[in-house]
Length: 65
Image (tube, rainbow, N blue to C red; front, side, top):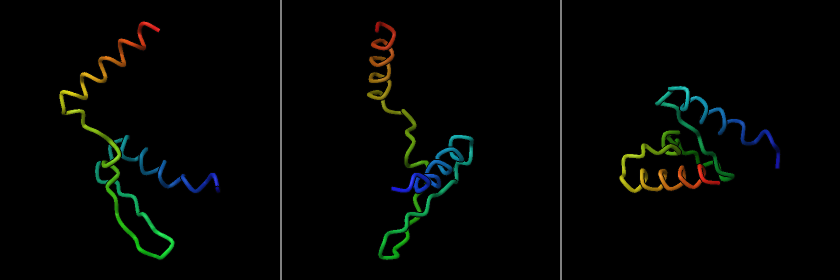
């Protein structure tokens, strides 16, 4: 696999992380079909209580190791 093949993905994630909330990624299949994917899809908003519970468990485990 070409190591540069993932550069557009990394650039899109970085753009979103830096505040470009409308960043999109074009997914192009071998058969030519293209789809736009909002990069925000790869980020969670942690609005669910289960997310906070999971993060607190992980944080506690990391603190004690």
